[in-house]
Image 1 (cartoon, one colour):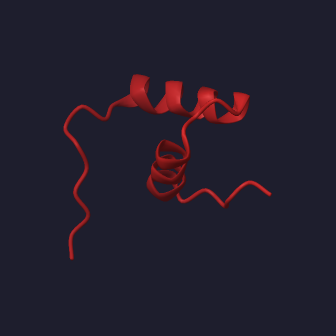
Image 2 (cartoon, rainbow, N blue to C red):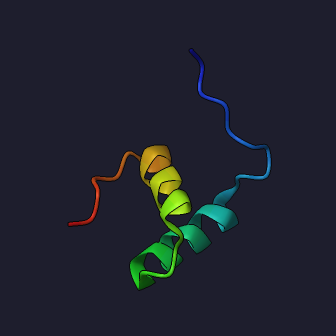
Image 3 (tube, one colour):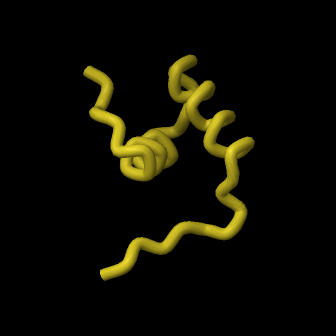
Length: 44
């Protein structure tokens, strides 16, 4: 099955999500999304 991503995903959106993730203020759902999108290992 082909992965589908919203059309609004762009560099600015991804950079903001990464910054929020690093600050620990990203919701669990969005954190999972950015980890899957960028193939990041889960924080422990």
